Image (cartoon, rainbow, N blue to C red; front, side, top):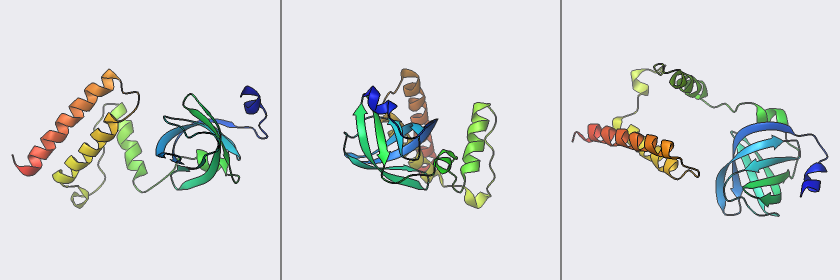
Length: 170
């Protein structure tokens, strides 16, 4: 397998990008570890087997590919058409992305999360509770859950229950 990796026709950029891989048994979140116009190294759980046709998506970008090899939670994929590597490594943008980035930066610095919207932009307590429940469910299903993350998940779930109680008045 090492010889196969060394016979690449193009240089690859070492990256650490989140993407979605669809094909084989469904859809899963993967990390793109290196990338070239013709292929990539991805890792994640339950990688499709060699020969499987897949689609790799990141933001609004997507590319069809074939799994060249798969082992130990990693896969080498070969794109069916060349991609624009610069576009793929650029942070994907969508409406509200800057607000999300600002909120995470504030949380990391233990500062209040900035709110830029008006009162009409606030979601209802019921909607907040529903979103928190969905986040808890996704986090609970995350492979590699640690004790520390599990404890934080329990705290988040308790907050979701409190929001539900506020929403229903009970």
